[in-house]
Length: 151
Image (cartoon, rainbow, N blue to C red; front, side):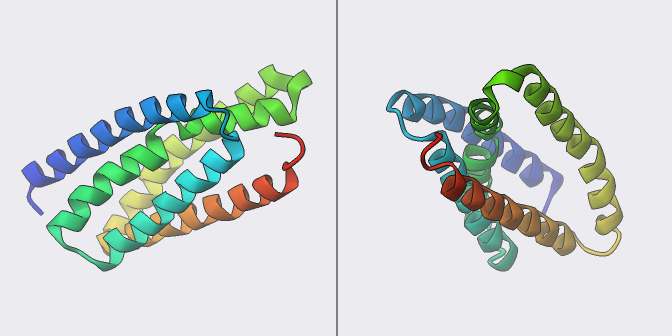
């Protein structure tokens, strides 16, 4: 893939992210449970990442970049924070601090890990992404089933 094509995919990802934020806002106003939004978005991300990892075609990468931006970046952080705040209403400040600290740690450490994996193959980076998305689906599923009455 050329550098120009890679940059184009990042732009498509960003557009997907903006669309995702708008849609998550609209869906939350329809009183859809945030845990269901979280599970659906992590599931969409996992399926998309698997498709992008196994079907290396330009159209799959194009649609996948938009979909990942939409589902993984488009408001999922806010939905996750909403869920955590509802689970621990008396500790909202602490929860917000822990939540964003974890996000910051991942923003620091993931590029180091992917930089190391890049020396072997980009495919390993995609596998790592799939693994992280799988963990997200697993954790989201646990949260949905354990919070049916709470959220």
